[in-house]
Amino acid sequence: MDMDLEQQLTAALEGRASGVPVAPADLGAVRSRARSIRRRRAAGGAVAGAAVVALVVPVAMGLGGLRSASEAPPVGPAPATSTPSVPAKVCSSTGVAKPTLPAGLPPAVATTWQQIVDAAAACDLSALEALGADAITSYGDKQGITNLRRWEREGDGKLGVLLKVMATTSGVGPDLGGVRFYGWPALSVRHTWSPLTSAERAELETFQKPSEVASFEEMQMYYGWRVGIRSDGTWLYFVAGD
Amino acid sequence: MLDDPSSVPRQRDDDFSAYVEARRAALLRTAYLMTGDLATAEDVVQTTLAKLYLAWDKVSARDAVHSYTRRILTNEVTSLWRRAWRRRELPVDRLPDVATDPAYDDGTAAALWAFVGELAPRARAVVVLRYYEQLTEAEIAEVMGISVGTVKSQCSRALASLRARVPASLERPDTHERPARSGDGEQ
Image (cartoon, rainbow over all chains, first blue to last red; front, top):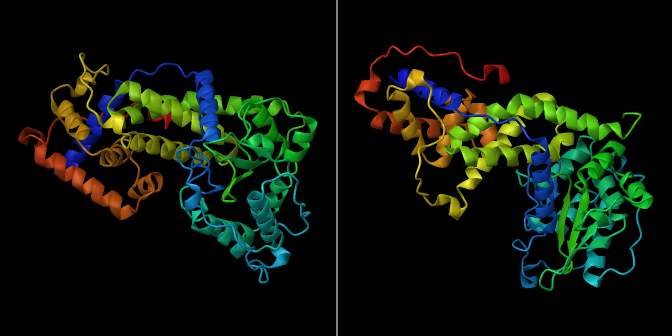
């Protein structure tokens, strides 16, 4: 009887589906919605999504997702970096220039920036995990730090990318009720798109392929690797994709 | 890398456009079966394709695109029902604008469709993926991010629910011949 019911169920669904009228695809409308999604995410929507190569703090940078300052983990001294989690010889940050702290950042943001850079340069995944606490996660599987470790182990590490992203010019997002977030590269937090300058292009091409940069320009949005730190020093995300 | 960087977006759009042309109808049918509403299904498919477009460069393995797209679509459908405003029942003053296949218009299909419509959203998605998309339990588990055991139990409960409600006349072996699946060429 079950088989009979299953077959009838399949037939019923197929019959129903066959009556669905299908209008021609409108690629322009798809692209328009894609821009809208991207803008929403950049302006405050959840940064969660489907990309499989992403690390992000779930609170992300949204209005709805922002925690109050009292809930933010304290920004303390840099975690110990004496025991690298990954042997230096296989670390993706080996040989990548360690950037120097840019001027003009708020003290809490500057502290976190330096801690991230120190940990990435030292291949200290444990320190990075501590900086992100339990908030840092990957899209979908919530195992961001595991992914960082795995990528390093498998030879597709992103710590070098992290250092290069931190070396880019920073930008500051809008004031969200007394809270701001700082983003690297700057155009990752820019609300409106403007043509890339040669300097911006050069910065991006230190960690993104030219074809990817071309896609950003074509889409008029940036969705490559980016880092965000909230004004209270909370590391929000290290993420790529949407 | 292509010699002419300006050709990259063009090639990207051509690839994406070809994929949309080939798959949009199938996606819309699946979305309709999962939502039961054509306008909602079209909206879900539009969002699904937009998200796919954003991730297009990162979905390098073309044989993985189908499952990736199906995952986005299923997530979109199931997330719809988490939004309170979607949970309201909206009165309608017209019949659904999707006609049933006359071959099944003897009450059987309509009855089963009505029962499917009363399943919980996630159970309904499982049923559509299993009995329309013909995915294996493992594939459904992958698409929905749940365990195979959960898929099995969802299917089992859905079937039990249908069996309990289906008229006795539907239980006897019938004379329906199973037609060729519409849209097979697009799968």
